[in-house]
Image (cartoon, rainbow, N blue to C red; front, side, top):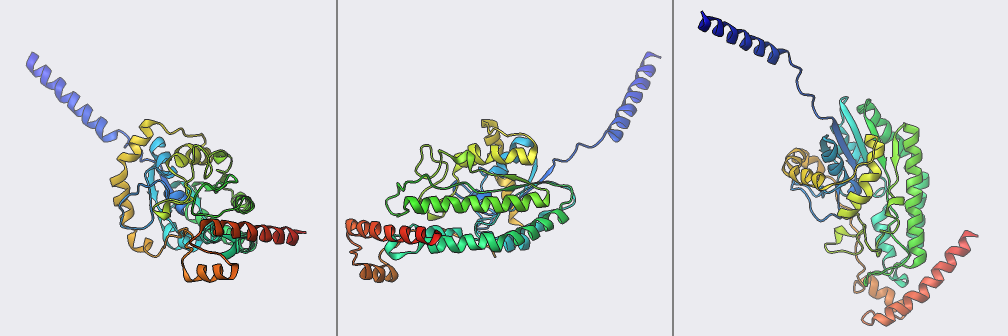
Length: 352
């Protein structure tokens, strides 16, 4: 009788357990986070990239990976080095769905040709027209970029109607000095380049507000951490060259992550050793996930800064006109100072 009762009790317990298993709610899926944009979101500058069969230079040390690791989000990492607004529209927005919970995006710098502007301004003044390059970029930012961003943001909202969207800006790169031996940025040029970043951030913030999106401006966080600062959160002239003038690991963990996370998640995210470990552990998963987009990502070409080459035919022709001996650094620098003063004076006169 006791054995019969025990079997009956066990049978009842088993049935109850089975019922519990059948009726227990399934574990909720991790919130979907889609990271869109260019090299400042992909992680170019961190020197460590996932092997996803692309040239996008996506890094687990970039702020999208760090935020998703800290918060337990499911990351679709579409940001890609070199991306312009048409690239985001054509290759990245397909990752958005009606269930996407979070979106971040930085874009506009490549559209304004910022890598080419930096390349021009890094050259000695006797062989370049930095002010002209900056003027052209600013004209694009003021005249063409606003409508392009409004259209892009409307498309994001249509594809991800429930998502919380954080639009991300750009830091000021320079601190007023040039400590790199093979570049010739003047203080005036650095100030104008920083002002151009401010202009880009202002136009982007306005378009984001019109779309109902949050805007994260990293410029304040990077004060004291620009190129040539100590510690430096932005790489100066680097090897390989693609690392130049982009946030490094510290720039993403200490600059971008606490700046972007409040607009995206509602609270600032602090990167801890655990966060880094989780991000590093996601490498293989992220690589496998993004490799399925490799064919479309192949259409995007990185927009790299190019170091000055004083021995190119164009440089030698400019040197001949300016009376410069390109094999004599003192001659190069003396002429640069003279021509830079002339260009600064002409620019100031044009502002009057």
